[in-house]
Length: 252
Image 1 (cartoon, helix red, strand yellow):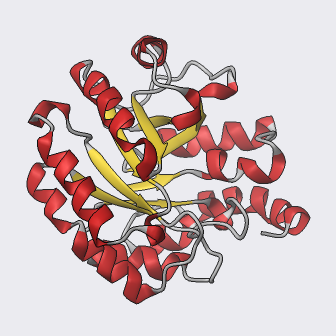
Image 2 (cartoon, one colour):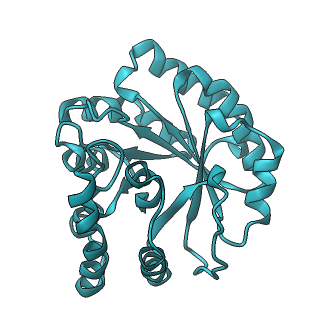
């Protein structure tokens, strides 16, 4: 599943102040294409989310991270939401146990949950074994739906991505899908994402024109083409037209 995280990751450039025209056109796009997931932003931003009736199979996510804390209020916000139907949780290995305890609650409440493990370039063999062991200890109905590996600093080479995907491939035996989130600091976000897909990632992130933190992320439009999604090229060019001046302004 391709996931559009432009509004969340791209917001680091413009303080999450996207024009209403961009928001409207992105929502129109995502209403049409239910095979591309949509991350609208951080739950903590208190944005006034529009009331949308999404297609039955459409996945629409909010993101939280460790600093937000893990409260029952967050779970209730997602349950009560008429906009989100999934939650992505970003954490590093230091907070993993707390996050997994929280994920037990989200899954018991039937919330589709993605665990984003950040800074995977820093993991050693002992770290990887520990993460896998902790996931294996969870009951089946308490495990995240997706375990997403985030190259937070954009420091992985393609061979490193191949290694990290192989190291975590056993996760799929736990009925957890693998995901990948790339940054473009070395100009390898797209190449690493495609390598991750070859290595078993069934979820993968992208942003329009790569708009994301620092040097950006994998380009969503390229992933659309390379992974066989059928999207009207005129619609795609319309969206890209919104982001071209932003790239010129913020220079990612």
